[in-house]
Length: 509
Ligand SMILES: [Zn+2]
Image: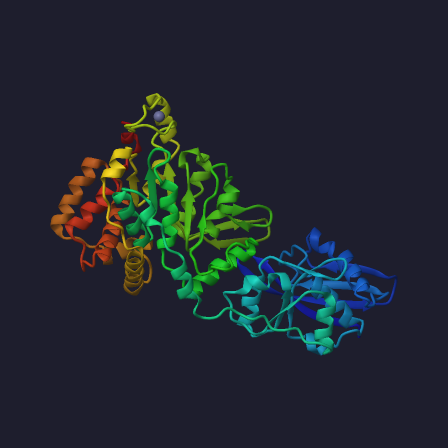
């Protein structure tokens, strides 16, 4: 019987589903049909597969060819099935032995000359094959994307002929060499934050360490040129390197988006800095193929929004769901996908449209009406989601010169943050910023005297209940950072101090 089956993988969200590629050669007029919910790029596969087989000096069968991609209800997009289709046609026509194909997952888009091109989600597909202990063949161009994995059953191929030779036994494809295990330490040592390059902003530098130690969201407010962007860049370097499991999650999302910049230092938490013209699809994900957005690309790392009020306010509101849930669900007509989006939000903004409100060196030219319109773009609920808000003042040149600062030992700070994070994981299984209502009750209790102090402060400053919970979580992190077993009043006062900008209107002095 002229039937052969090969296997491939479909990517839906951040999951790689097994797809069987069945080919039947029958009598009748020569023709080529692909069934099983294929999108346009898959339908065009016919032309690529035919040319690739002919140009590899193999025989394209002069029969009626039916290819079925099963299960039929999974959406199938892109040219990723080309290679599996070509191999199954060659097997059905007796040019390859059928039995040896049985176990393999085969992935790759074909060029007309038989070269194999890169696909998206290569890492996810190999990880899924590894879980099932199946050997997998993928494009040689995607080899470098696999560094987070350690799987000797993955083979890379450059052309269709290479794959055919592998199955006929003429010459074996070589398994992909994987990363060695010391990489975590090397990666950690290579990234040193430039804390000492930031002059005289001691409050900001302290807030940065607290934010890193507890995974808290941070808002930086100050005139242009005071180092807000540099501070945000520093934060990601202060964070501990990712565990293998977390690094794999990040690499999987990046592999779906076909991002390539993350490969060499794949254990570093990602930093994403979308421009303020970004649409909500770019930010939270979507589009007709349901691609991950910036919030998911920043998963386990930092999402930095510079010039926060310049973002479209509707776009900013779309951030609320992922901030609360740590994930984002995108619905399409025939399926739903859920992308992880557990990120630390860092935002920077000027105090007014011209940037000089409250600045001693230049006068602000904005009317109070313009300032309040500018600040009102950030809604109260969004503002509530920042745990730490700090003002970065502009210092006069004399102040910068006169303030003799001691150089901070960034290596030691990084170590302290790392052990602080580890302690939180051991205690609650998550960072302090991720604690829910029950976790706050359990781990962030304060004395009855402190409770009274908090009650009067909340009333005086008009804090919301959500703000109160965030203060408790930050206080817990400060206590952890200072190695206090329980939250002390000084920890609480420092945490309250980081929320003095809660009513942004009060900044327009
Ligand atoms: Zn101004």
